[in-house]
Image 1 (cartoon, helix red, strand yellow):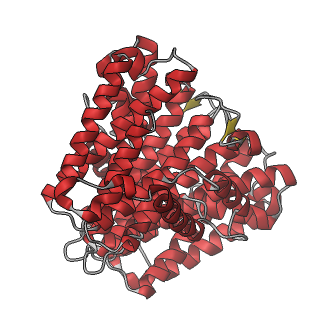
Image 2 (cartoon, rainbow over the protein chains, first blue to last red):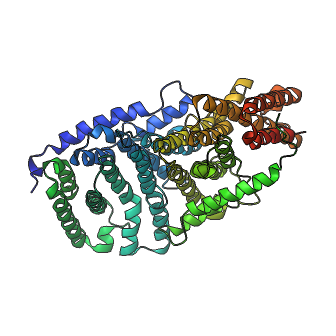
Image 3 (cartoon, chains in turn green, blue):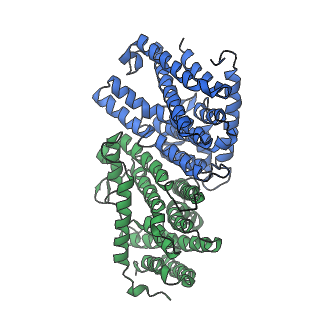
Length: 287
Length: 287
């Protein structure tokens, strides 16, 4: 089994986040370009940012499959930009109407609603521009595959579709099945796509791609379950895993699924240690 | 010179629009897919649609450069989806707050503001999914180039950037220079990108790409000038070419630029006849 206890996950995440931040810095509009105010608003929504969990997953997956992680940087940043775009639009008055995000005013509070709408639009468009800068030597066909993977994860079959299903569920009442369906799109699709993009850049075999898909679907599910468990301690009311499945059953599912994820990674050997540590971290943060 | 008088432009546009509509029909989500309501809203914003001017420009440009226009269909549809996305978000209450579009309720009036926001998001994401389906035999590198061209035209350096500049200009007052800058992004960038995408699919030489870029920049400018002239007859007040340049000067610029566009196309021969007829049509519709 993986020795995740002696792996410095915090140090690893910090180092990788720095790499992602530097790349995002390079990709975003420069001062003085056309419509320069827009560049400022885009940067406001991307920096300082959170843990950069999705792009790090892309890089870790590429590395676990023996690829140069630098080749996966455009894909990694594309997934982070999709995530940032979704936060800007989710915060808008017609959605969650939030005033603060990560301790500072949301984009529409700081710059106005029209500018926030357009900044979100510019971020999702830039995500695809960055994804299309994927450049794997001798494999030009991978560039289009990364763009399609990003769109699949973000669009009507993924994150945005999940948001629509979530709105439906809130109108019509949630069941265990609808909760799973909502999260599969709303939070799961980007995590799944981010990992798969790393595998695609690495030229994964169909079997490896299948394995990383299952691993990342588990990661997304456990992320959501443990998030719900942590939230339940402050606000026990909303529709969530603890309310629909019960606290004990939620913890049991999270543990069982994490075991399965580690089992998938086992044959991959030492290079998959960061992926194993990530899976383990998501689980133990609720203990 | 081109015999645009005896060219059946109306018949040509109808035939090409049918090809575009059939392709869009195939690309958009099917009934019963994940989040099926969303597919319905996406279709509501794409059909029946307008003249399909941008995608037809992509197809006509590819044909003028001796390519099979079918190879340019994904790029063509991508540009139409970007256009449809922009209409949905432009109509939102925080932007133009329009209740009707093409004789039917706008998306947010028909389905609610949150759904309209997400449907616009799903459309722009689908635009890139479709662009990334570009598949030119033996030229896999063209797929990424089409995605980047679409993002350049749509994003902070193109259409969305132009919308931000337009908001600035309305706050701070418009000059001739700012009017030209706004339109270069807001309406020009998609027209330019749509034509360039057709040329890129056709494997245009750098000289041909430069020529089609100049032609399409003129097309976008004349489109805007003649639109403003037509609008001035019903509402003479808003910032426009007639108000800033005067009516006679606006008409003179449109005529002079159209002559230049036809001059660029001249050496391309008979295959460029639809492009010439398009340029001529935009001019004469104000006479």
